[in-house]
Length: 91
Image 1 (cartoon, one colour):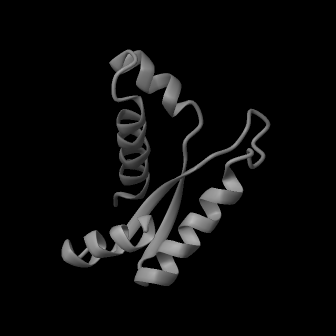
Image 2 (cartoon, one colour):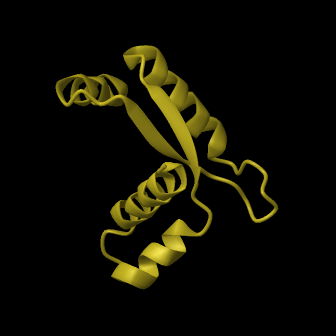
Image 3 (spheres, one colour):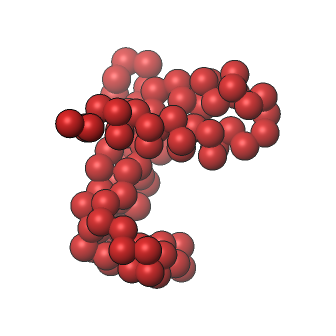
């Protein structure tokens, strides 16, 4: 259901790429949720054909809480991840 809803938005908005957080532990290894994130990314790619890019999300939730308190932490963390990707890949 989620993937088909995302596919509809991707098609409607002519989105050509998706950025997802690359979630790792303090040692830089995949953390417990990364398996699900990788499957999610594969499902998006399979369903839509768009490229899916991974961007490190180390401590983005901590930074988001510092910036927003307890409100909208996930949205702020996603903003930080996307901004990091754009900054890193801008030419």
